[in-house]
Length: 77
Image (cartoon, rainbow, N blue to C red; front, side, top):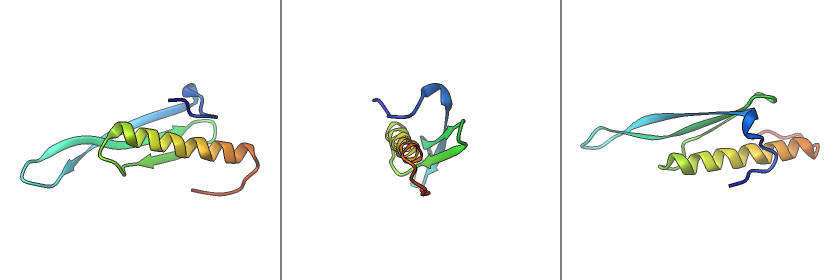
């Protein structure tokens, strides 16, 4: 998937696992943090169970932020 305004060489993506409660202790990789190095903007997402979906949502949010900067919007997420 293409994310406008996000250059893959400008970002650092890290993920982590969390232990879900229940009868079995299962470590599920689901959290994602995307850091845009030139601006220092960090987006963290752990809404969904899927790490791939969380990565997609974090990159979309970062893309929207970068488009806002380009258009001169002054807002925070």
